[in-house]
Structures are given as structure tokens and as C-alpha cells.
Image (cartoon, rainbow, N blue to C red; front, side, top):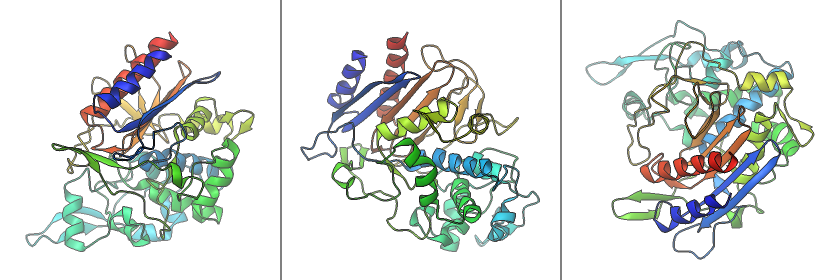
Length: 386
């Protein structure tokens, strides 16, 4: 897959990113791993295949798998009402608007949210980056962001719509992690280590930057009109609550093992992480007739607008975006994908037996630099593999 080498090198030489790692696998195993550029601008340390990245929203698929494991263990069902597991959920209200003085108008929701709603972004919870009412609400109430790591931040987000009536992107997975903790009787970091990371040999995937990972941590960057610069962004260390929407650190190699497990019906290298029927549930459409629509950014320095495959209808599984049609020269229908805000990306294509992880560490999310790299890598992968 030598054509990928040139793509990685040009991504750096053309200034599209300070550095990146790309890892590719088929059902037979890993077929490509390479890195280019540097871990941090202004430093000589080169990017390497074992570099450690802030995963941010790539954490979400791990949270969904943790919930699926709890389902497999008989601790939950997807249709379990959230309030049965987490009674404090009853405090979450629905935002109807603001009065003349800017005070939020809230009411109790009419629909009881379920575990499925939390996992699939159909709960009504929406990030402040994607909904203009959320920054207004947080300013009016002084509510802390979920990125604070405070348990109180779970209650900073009122519902924007009745559960199950719409898809929109938010902190449902953070509540989902709390639900798993409640039924499993242990913290989510311990649960994930026991049931996901250790069986898959993901020794560089953790909720904190452990000593063996710290020397390989990649610097975060932002691209502005003046060019590239450092940007201070990271999950809070030792938080009150580990947010399953954003808390993980990982490597390209580790995350590739995770998505290969999902592509291969819950198993990898003889280790069964999920039973086949549970893995199939994770990768099935879980939003019914709803569709994943365009996400319009209200924070352009952090993210461009996100419009997944606008030429077709898109669904959401328990863990990932699902495209419903083949994309010429790229992934097949039924492929699963998602990303992290610092432009860590993945997809796996069960029909073609292809999995890929593209690890960058820069903002804005899905800017033209990132999209050009993603497109070139994906096209090269399918061309090389025939």
C-alpha cells in the first residue's frame, strides 16, 4: 500500500496537518501502518505509529460497547428507562425557549428516555457546539460544560426535543456511562479495562495519560488564518465523572483492534469481547425511521459544519454512523464510522472487510485540510485493496 506513504508525506509537506498516523486492516490482519510529520510543532520528536492521541468522541463507540456488554450480562436492556437505573434523570427537563428576560422556559418531557436513546443521540441532549440555544442556556444559568468533568455538568444540558423524535448530537453517552456504572457496581474506567481493553490487548488506551504513555502524547494544534499554532485542549484529569463522550486517550493501533473486533462479530485473535448476536446489535440501525442530518456548527473555530454523505440517507447504530448506500471508490453500504473533535477518524466496512483509523490532532474539526486527507486515504485504501 505504498501509495498511502505518499499521501501521508504530502499531507505534512503541504501543511494540511503537523503530523498523522494511518492504520489499515482487512479480515486477515493489519496491512498498513505508517506515520508522518511531528508530534508537536516546534519540537523534533517525529510522529510514530505508537503515538498517543486524545480520542475525544471516538470514546463514544467504546461507551456503546460497554453498554452492550452490560446488556449481554443481563444488567440492562436497550429499552430500559434511564430513570429506572439513574433516578436523578428525572431532574432533566425539556427547554421550550426563553422568556422576555432571557430566563429559560422548562417543562417535564412527555416521553421517558431509554438506554437506546442515550446511546444513539436521540435522547434530546445536544452539545453547546451544535445548538444555539445551549450556549444561551449555559450563560443564563452558569451551567458548567461537560468537559469540566464535574458530575453537576450532566445536568447542564436540558432536552432540546422529546426523546426518540429526532437525532441530534450530544452528551447522551456520558449519561450512558453512568448507567453502566450503576448496574455494574464499578466505575466505567474499570469496567472498560476489564471487558474491552484487556481482552483486546489495548494497553495504550486509558482514561488518563499513564506514565508509559506520556512520552508519546501528541500535541494539540489549531489552524487559523495565521497558520498552525498550539491549542490547549484535553479531557480533565481525575474528574468527578469520566465522560464516555470524550475521556479516552488511545493510539491508532489500539483503536484499530477495537473496530476490527466490531467488524469481526465481536471477536479478535480468539478473544470474544461480545457474543455475535450482541455485536450484531451494536452494528444494526438503532434509530428506526429517523435519519442523521446535517450538524450546523455554532462554534466555527472548533468545527466546521458536518454533513455526512448528503446524497443519501444516513442511520445510526448503537455506536456509529451508518451510510445506507455504496460510495463509489470508497466504503460500501452498512459501513460504520465516527470521529473525535481533534480529527481522529475511523471507519469499518463489514461488506468489504476493511477497517481504517486516521489519527490527526488538530482543529477545526472536519476543516478542508482534514477532509482532503480523509478522502485521499480512503480512496487509496480501496484502490490498493482492489
